[in-house]
Length: 396
Image (cartoon, rainbow, N blue to C red; front, side, top):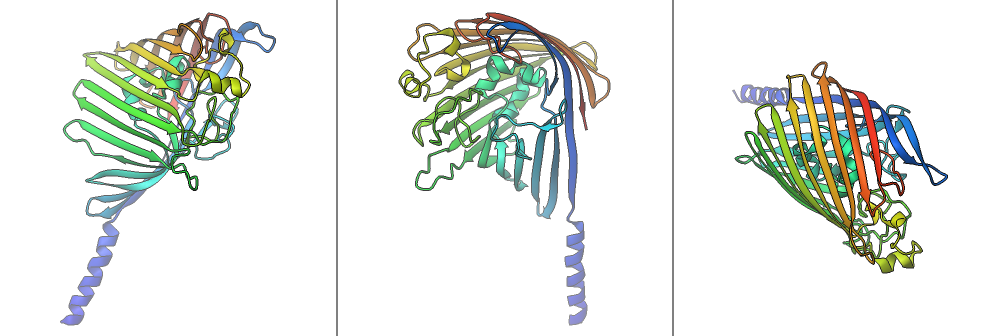
């Protein structure tokens, strides 16, 4: 009898193991468009028209792997690895020289998921990436980035060495916390990053709030003016790293979206403060006075407000008409007045299937007392630029 009970117990253990399921999914996006821009800055100091084949007009081209294993009792082990690439050249896609050779620079996480929510560890984006679905990012993607979204990080900030916690949906509310370790011995705050986010979904209404802050890693001044916070998110710095542990970047995002029948309307506001961009510090490292238009770039603004309104109207289940306006006001230490950037966008998106769509965008940017970042390429000191993109995107 005892032997029979023991045999049944062993068989039960194996049966439980057999019921534990795991799966791995391979997915990706390939997005490419032909882009025309007027008045692109040239190497000789002038401007000229530019035609190009651009990868990732709406969404960055990528391939990813994600998996889940049922551990029993409602607990799952999960992972997600994602690599970006430029499909017009086949190269790995990096936001700067320090990450362009990193294989899984877009995402590299592992963690646990269950009734408590999810905990993820690795390189991941903060909650701004989630609430960006309520903004122009959902329709225009990176097309509206240069005029402000790249600065306010509305598409999320990729944070190295980070741990995040996301709640399950609680009566429409979902919350998130993220912390990035600076990993500097004796200086806990050097390179540190942290953020908190909250969203609310209730039928046609969507609301989102997010905060993100990063600390300087103390690696010194860099001429890299890419619109990326100085933190553990990247080994490079935005304009000036300053003393290790000093606040480098603070950003607030407040977004709202509402579905009126076939039309989705949305609006948002972001405020960015880059505390290290002071006139004294910039002069000390040889950047010179900011009292010239050429030095008034968004990357060097010490404070900026970014506003947006837009709509997406579904003429049919397959065809959307799109429109959005972005406006950024930036101020600089030692300079009176504010620089202003405005971009007007119209477009259409036609889905040939659930996975493949064709899109066409038209944009006009106007700059006052600030360098015109352009839609994809800067115009230098020119005050305005027109751009057109026609492309195809396939998801698998």
